[in-house]
Length: 542
Image 1 (cartoon, rainbow, N blue to C red):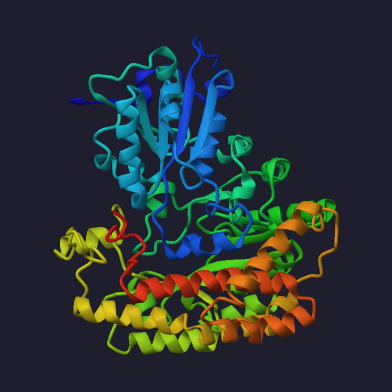
Image 2: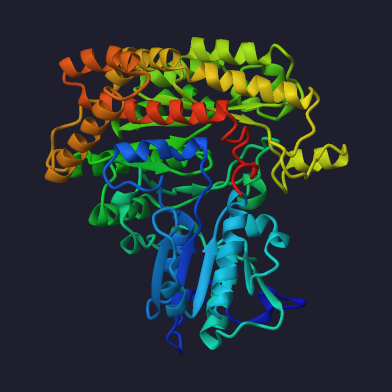
């Protein structure tokens, strides 16, 4: 394949909002294979917890590709394969006319491998999603690049595929100029996968973030003015999930759930009513900036809607470092006070922590460990700084000659501290943070100061169904056997589990048992060099 052909908005008359795909009637039958590539193992996939669960094979469904699958013409036959659950087979490729792939930068090798397999079967290949939108040059072998979000480019791509499925002589690019409003997004194609194969499921309410953290590519990919779905859309998606399965937890994958606080305030009463009407079938979780703690009315509604976990990008407890990475929103109130505030509303905080910042000193590791001890946050993604393309950090480091694009490094950043010293500081932080005694000490704090602040949900049919009881008994028995009997930290485990079981706090034992097991096992692999210090790095993933 040689050359490049870009389809701008002017190359077709089908670009107005009145002529969206939903009004398009295809002229030909097409078989579309949507493949989501396998994730590299990382801290955040919680993969060590899966063997303690019932039939779980992956963390959460690929929301973006599910929306694309739902947006394609209903007359077409669409098959969906998430390779975190099962691999696409030769029969899948032979069946298809077109193979569509999506993913993030960390999945780049897997994305290109799917392209190779599809081409070996003689199929037209298309790649879309955040990675190709940020770096089209990463995917020279694909026939078609879909750059940008769902919108007019998607409509033009669908029409092109309807007209022909032979591989073009030169790569084609369809670039979105007019994004489809989130209020017009279809319900993701949940019916094409088994939701019970996932650790949790997910939903998108908004897109975009108003902040400009130096290391983040979200504002450039999705904009700084958050765009929203309607509350009615969110409820339709929740209903669609429950029809095909219920992992028990729904994660709002918004870049910042409170990026538009007024919209969040409008959504929450609908979520509360939905939970009450359906018997509180799920817990909710989300990502939000730490200044959420300054909105008591919002927090009270989140508590009533049964939000139990909030991921906050704390990044560092050092104020000077926060200023240096444009994370000023974390400075509006003391960080530990904000964490304790969220705990008082029943929300366990999960935090991002970054090592390797320009402001780091040999004492930074000590300060992070002290912060972990004082904040009592159980789970923190302690990660090395890694520059993503198309971010302010990338551009600054490129101008300073501090990008190192070499094989075998844990990060592409030339740190100001010696490289080996930064790696050792990371290794010390993660191994001490996830020492079983220290970890279970923090979970004990949550048992006393966070979990009791949650609302008492009813023992509704949705919660005590036969399927849920069987799932709970399976997880509890596996945890008690593999951790309580065979685990190398079983004495520490029983200090937590015995009194909790005596009080009938089975859900707490299961939650802590699953999460702690993954954190401890993953950390043991980090300590012997089997996992990467940056979860964006490909060092050990090839």
